Length: 138
Length: 111
Image (cartoon, rainbow over the protein chains, first blue to last red):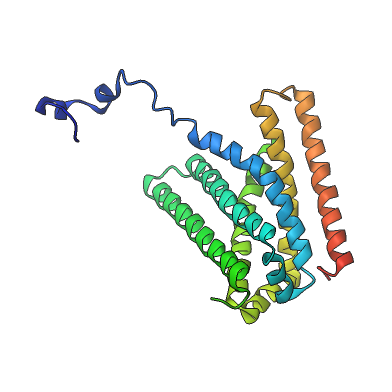
């Protein structure tokens, strides 16, 4: 630990160090993020349904064509970023509620984060490649 | 009560739905061949059943999520109101899913 502390501070308990400092104000962070992202996902989710219906009959060219439109590309990027954030927090709560063995819980939480971050990055990169360079770019 | 746990189940289902969407995006960037594998999988009978389940899950999670937002604002906690809103969410889920799939069949997106 850094800071202007005397050596005796090293022997203080975590509780005594935290006492008197007030709340960290991060306690409701995840809870609030889950609500804020859910509001954003109402229009973005409906856009996704529309986009799915739009590209379903047309195959490859139709999907590339949809993403060549800037509005659709931005909507897709927002949908990915916000939904993977929403999913990561949501499934984190589910894991914390049902898995109580420390090893299993930590493993699943790490897996959850890894899956969400990786899928988000891979999908967003792909959307950008298609939007900027057309299909078949990877 | 039942609607609340169903919302959680729908959310976890949509988690896998988002991974399918991510697969579609990556396949699209890889080119026509990879995207063809993706659309063939989604267009098969098991694929369309998964998409049907995801459509149901999406509209249920949407409706139940909005219901939860009202609850967070302190509205709709009376047992009669809560039961009514659960029925509305389920009805909305069925109607919206039917509408989307009717559109999919009408436009040739589903067979």
